[in-house]
Image (cartoon, rainbow, N blue to C red; front, side):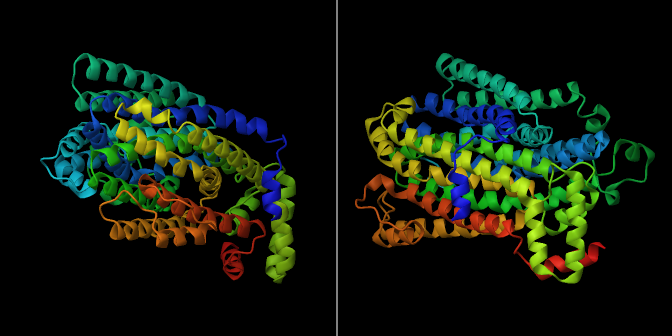
Length: 552
């Protein structure tokens, strides 16, 4: 409970200025991201419930597809931080260029897949038939939005690279321009030309392409990436042709990029687990009709707006903790702490080296108690920064949850005029608001562990939490197949195990949102366990000794 006391102590400290400089522009940028989808939903909602539900289904498929490449954001940030610490701008340029090529290639492959199998994917994810208006709207929107997937993934990689440079203002400026393009396109194509769902999709495509071009141009303009690296796609040596011309065009892949892409791709499991829960809930809502599907889409958009805004603190955690883990002139500390603990003291390199030497002696002597004490001293600056980020995450998330619950009647009216949809969404929004405080902690922990490159444990744990949430949804659907109700007495007892209480009343529209509580509570428990265990360096001591022996 000592950790909880530290987190809940609300006082200004030395890290607030650094956090604010990174988090405030990132907050604005991440808050603008869901606005791009919310603007589409607000305009399309005026066309009807079927169109709004179709946009929600297509958006869910797009999120599911792009989740396989979210590692581009997380993996490039530590690479850039390490390159800056080592003073190697060429390595930074090659790594960022390679990430952009990977993003462009992956986006092209995804676009071809979605264009060719759009009707089948919509039927699979929504359970609707081809003759349904919901199905037709979803297919139209999906095919047009798929054209911008290369630009979307390039924007992912660019955003991660800018975070490594501790620059969140440039992505904010580009995001503002992109959202203005989206807003103007929606007004002109939907209201002006009457293109309907297709107009909303084309407006979003234009804004996403503008965002990617703006970020890449900023890299070149600020001389963070060299044009010669952008022109040359990286390729493994085995794929090189023997001809001179082909060898001249290709550059060898960055070893750091390949390493982090392989390790960071584990994050795809995490993203797929989270989106799997969302996808199952979306499919079940769509199978019940247009009104439940539209109500669910409104709730999801509002909830995602709050959680994506909270991700600003995760951005600060990734950037600042990654910098703290890679102190300049602390090579011995990096060799020990990155391999053994994935932690490092960034403030005092001389003290850090001295502590690492003492730690090495203690490890060789087999003195575990002394090792734990020294590890705690090494981790103290990073832990202080991490605790402050967790504190701010909990405070802001609670405030957002209160606002979401208080605006449950006003928020749905932004998206639609249908009384049935408004009533259903207003009843479900408090359930989404309930898990906001947990989101504040979970998002910050995600950023901390991404900076420490502790991917495998987090991905496996979140996959387990997602499986539990999906199981709860399937049990609810099996019990009441024709209802939007997912709170069963059995389901309540499952949540009671996680939460320690049972709701006194059950309402039909409160079903699918409670599954997200299961998901968030599971993620909270898993990440909290990892964070607390790493504080006193208890994890895998004999494995730790083996790594030290190999490193020397």
